Amino acid sequence: MTRKILSIAAAAASVLMSLAACGETDKPSAGGNGGNGGGSAVTDLNVPDKEGATVKGIVINAKTRAAMPDVVVSDGRLCTRTDANGMYWLNTDFSTQRCVFVCVPNGYEIPVDEDFCFGGYKKIDLGKKDEVQQFNFALEPMTVSSLHYEVLYLGDPQIRQEITGSYESYQIVINALAKYKKESDVPVYMVNVGDLTYERPQAHTYFKDQIAMTQIPTFNIPGNHDHIGPLNTGSGLIPSTLVDDPAVHTEDYIAVSGYIRDFGPNNYSANIGSLHYLFLDTIIWNEIDTPHPDADKGVTWDGDARWHYCEGFDDETLEFIKNDLQYVDKTTPLCIVSHGPAARLLTSSGGEQYPNWLRNYDKFQALIAGYKVQNWAGHIHTGYNYSYSAGENGLQAASMESHQIARAAGALYVEGEVTNDGVPRGFIVASVDGADITWKFKRAEPAEKNGNDQMQIYTPDEADPYMNEKGYVYVNVFLHDNKWGKPEWYENGTRIGVMNEYHAEGDPAYEKSWDDWRKNPAASGHDDNRDSRGPTDSDTRHLFRIKPSAGVTSGEVRITDRFGHEWTQTCEW
Image (tube, rainbow, N blue to C red; front, top):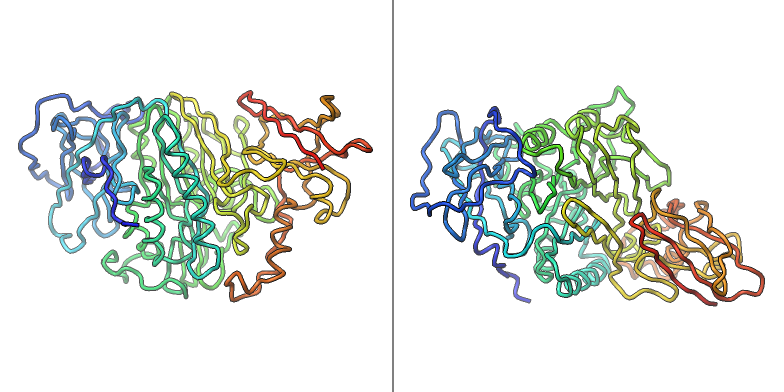
């Protein structure tokens, strides 16, 4: 295909970014919305210097060419709003910041680049760090309502070109995304929650080519595998053009350089409709043999010899959140996108872990106090939703939902049709109606026998070869959480009973994928023995079972989700 595809928004909205000091006394507005740019056209785009400012610019309406007041602009640390003339100034530190972006106000198109990835930013020219740099933005007004739209959330694409099936599995998901976009009657956006590739920056071009095929405006954030340090044997070269002076920069600054080179800012925000979105880099890299910042709490560096990192919020990210939210009213719901869950976590070994592993979690909670928060994350490759109780584990947000999104392309290594906990290849569809959000799962491929988009039933003849206890009917309800009902089992139209949660073993389809892999592991392209990595008891928290009545060979599962919708699926064997 032709790689360079230009969207209308990209052509119309050439966005430049700059940051001014945040000591202003502006009062917050819901969603940080800017002016409508309905005044007279701006003919002079030059912005005068201001003492102390290293970055300056102007934001205008791309259609009317009128200045846009009260639009938030940021460098990923500092934030400011444009004045009555659409101008802004920022005292950006060129030794630490590398991009300036516009926090798109409600009612305007999300600017995208030629590959449909977020394009509302400009890179700081490190070769001109002694000069004041000007970045201007032209934002395109939306022609349809921004109150009704859909966001497609994908977990950990993690493509790796030398692994058989890696590109192919991702291509299946891309085709499904493009089809979904084509058939939707509302605006559609995509969010990748990190680990875009598996430590392969040379695969960024392929990744962006695939996004371009969907023609969906896409937000990305970096994961741990998008942080590439010098010790990482698969990394290739660190892009030196983005590292001013490696001797004075942190390992984290260097490690995320490749991501910033190809995707832009690693911390940024946007407004769509009634919601405010924060896209955050919660991976903190360190390769030097020094103690972990929270060593006094017994925390050690995660990872192996290739990469050492911890998760949480470093000082730069905390400062950005603080400065960004000063312009967002407490009544505006927040969607916080992070690689690792910024709330409760279901670990890959099956245990539930509260966020004591997250650096500066208490400071993060203080910043989001009083907001209604949806946290969308990945990292663990399994699906797990959790709704916090008021005040639970230091929660200061008015309410908080944790969405741990399963890997979109299936289980890593085997590149199977399902993830470690049986969630099929696919993505979460979040439907936004004003300030209300509902969500459901969407398979990337047609459902297997006895399954649909929300669940998969395993009959005794399908499950028995892979489960220790025989004769049960199992159902995996992919997005089940503590606000859903329990699945109910029906035989011949008669309710037999509630199906019970079952955590002792993994999903039968996942077990089968490893059985198939073991028959010919070399065909996968892996040069190491992954047999010890799976299957593990991934503790599928959304697997249920019941013993059918004697002689019965068919039945039906019914379950009501947290939004009151009843889902049903029949099965027979």
